[in-house]
Image (cartoon, rainbow, N blue to C red; front, side, top):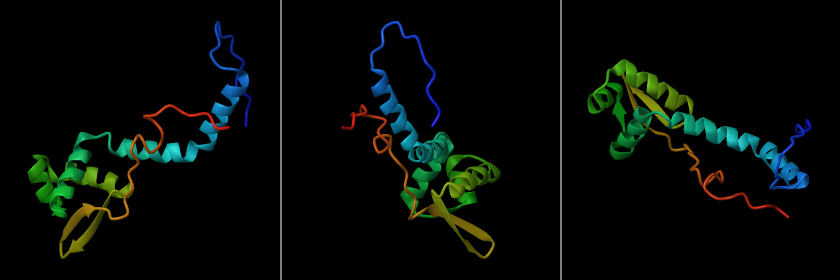
Length: 125
C-alpha cells in the first residue's frame, strides 16, 4: 500500500493514525464498493429503472412490448436490456423468434445503506 501524501492541514480534525485506519478501510472495502458502483451505474438511467419496474409489475415482456409501454424504439430498449442483462439484473428466454425478458432471480442490487453510504462510518476498535 502506498503512503498517503503529506498534507499541511491548517486545522486537522483527525489524527494521522485515524486517517490511516480510514484509508485502510477504504482499500479493504474497495471490491465491494466497486461492485456497488457498477450496480448504481446500471440504475443511473431512468429508462433502465423503468424497465425494471415494468418487469417487476408484469413478470415478463418482449422488447416490442417494452418499447410500446415506454414509448421508445425497440432498438433503444434492446440497448438498455443488454446493459441490464450484462449486469445480471435481467434474464431472458427465447420462444421461437421472440426473446422475453424478466427480472433476474439472482439479481442482488445493493442499496446505499447496504454499502454504508447512508450512515456514518463507525470506527472499529
